[in-house]
Amino acid sequence: MAEPRPQIRVLLVDDHALIRTGNSLVLAATDDIAVVGEAGTGEEAIAVARALQPDVVLMDVRMPGIGGIEATRRITGARPGTKVVVLTTFDLDAYAFESLRAGASAFLLKSATPAALTDAIRTVAAGDAVLTPRVTGRLIEAHAEALDRADAGPPLRSLLSPREYDVLLGIARGLSNPEIAAELTLALPTIKTHVNRILAKLGARDRVHLVILAYRHGIARPG
Image 1 (cartoon, helix red, strand yellow):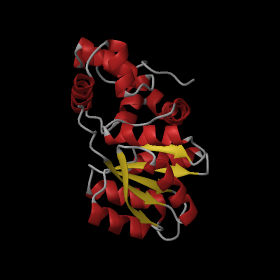
Image 2: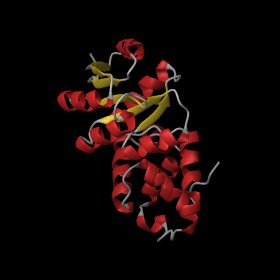
Image 3: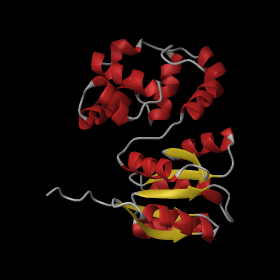
Image 4: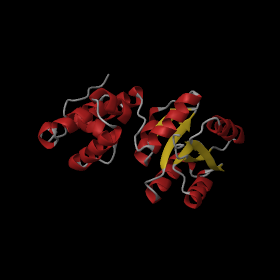
């Protein structure tokens, strides 16, 4: 008999109780995700996250007080192991970029399907990030002018092993770790090891910075 998957502990943050209830019902239908707490402001989110140490925080952007982006910055700064999925009704690039810069691992609209929401939670809990093609493309475009002026430095092929370079190509295309593993016919833990080595070798903080480096070296292009 297969052992049950360990549950992902989630904190719900939104200033509307009805939205928190709706998300709670969605997550209650899964067998591997458990809601462990709720908060209605950024300040409450920081305090509850400190007390409960959830695996994932579902974070609203516009809330009373300091708001979701600053709360994200403080939560991930205090405990990098806690991942943040930012949820908003506003499809604005500024929110996406600021959320990612604050340490969020995913940016989703509240109109996302229940399946997309649960998939995002599982993805970030596994140490991956959710960068949609639109957000990735806009992120590259936003940095394009500065990157075109920047010195690209030594070729990435000279810094990475052939397999690490293949993994970086997948990241540059917006693929998740499971998708890269399937494409390269490698085990998921192997892909995670390669990603960690790539981050260390290139001095990148996260996958967002890897995408920017990929643009700088001509691996990725806007559009």
